[in-house]
Image 1 (cartoon, rainbow, N blue to C red):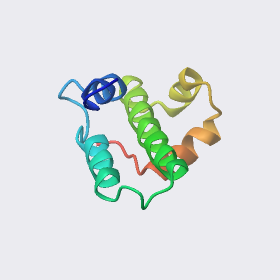
Image 2 (cartoon, rainbow, N blue to C red):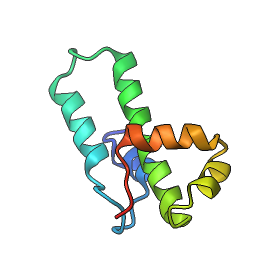
Image 3 (cartoon, rainbow, N blue to C red):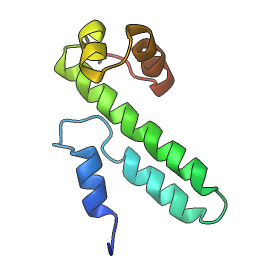
Length: 94
């Protein structure tokens, strides 16, 4: 049994200091804890999945220097799907 969520956060996020907003997943967990019982478990899972997707897509875009076609291929999704997810996640090149 885990005493804290730190090992999971480290595994999911894998932040190396150069990532954007490494505290977003931590903030999401804190919000969920603060409103314990108010959010259905399904919603908690949906929010966590969206954040994990945002982090993964952001990393892949950085690795490919924002070559969206190459990123889509590496992620195993269509180009159109990737464009929709980039928009939905609010990602943009810095």
